[in-house]
Length: 81
Image 1 (cartoon, rainbow, N blue to C red):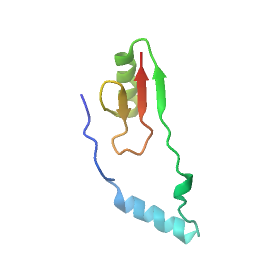
Image 2 (cartoon, rainbow, N blue to C red; image 1 turned 45 degrees about the vertical axis):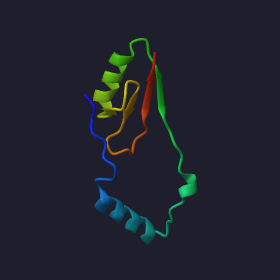
Image 3 (cartoon, rainbow, N blue to C red; image 1 turned 45 degrees about the horizontal axis):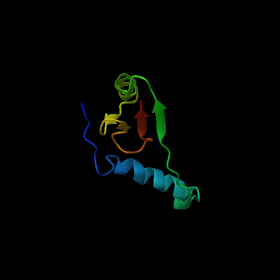
Image 4 (cartoon, one colour; image 1 turned 90 degrees about the horizontal axis):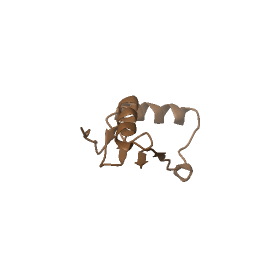
């Protein structure tokens, strides 16, 4: 069963508080330091392994080989046979 993926953050008040706290400490955002991370799994029984990690992480299916975190914050996971 696929999980709906929101297109925007469901936690803007939290993000605003975090930004305010960072600014009060003199910290500035540095978008150049952002990195993309993806988990990759090589599995003999891809559907079973995907189901385990979907349940363990609370991720949703995005096609037959990918899992994504519902808020698109955590790294996506890719599975191959």
